[in-house]
Amino acid sequence: MMSNKGIQSDPLTQATVTIAWVVALNKPFYPLYVWYLVGNGVAASLCTLLSAPLFLAIPFIARRFPLTARVALPLVGTFDTLFETKLFGPGSGTELFFAACIMLVALAFRPDEKWWQRGLAGLVFMVFIFSRSFIGPPLHVWADTELYTLFNLNAFAVASLMAFVALRYSGIARDREPTSPDES
Image 1 (tube, one colour):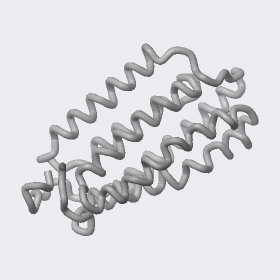
Image 2 (image 1 turned 135 degrees about the horizontal axis):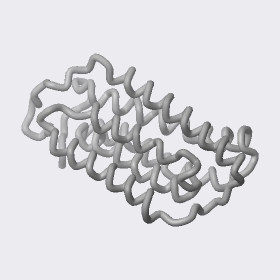
Image 3 (image 1 turned 180 degrees about the horizontal axis):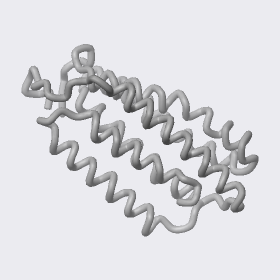
Image 4 (image 1 turned 60 degrees about the horizontal axis):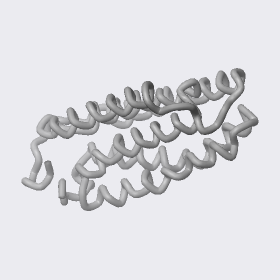
């Protein structure tokens, strides 16, 4: 058990919950974007919805275990990114979402939680290296023009997500000491 303190007094967890909701609520639109912009791969893009319940679980986890929720968001995001990279291939730009996961790791923890932060940063990086080196061919094959469009879609999505993450975490003090021994 990582923590049992509620999120009402934890701004970092509140920000994490907001990001989890934004990601979860945007998941259903991704297949629509693929259909409208690419025209192909809609059935494959429906598989991206498989991770939505994991993102939706984070706000509920945060109620009892704030640190667990702050660990879960970049962790779920990392493995979702790996899955989508296997699904669409590295040329689709899905690997750019690893940058958003690293950004979450950089912003969601206090100084006394540095070992969680370091471990997650290392894990995200190792999963990225795995995706670049060992993931194999994509499950869905795209034409070059489709990959170009998909890459642009994902680049825009990552930039938007990272801007939102920066805005949501801005001004939050990270140097607060835990108020209970279970909090960290």
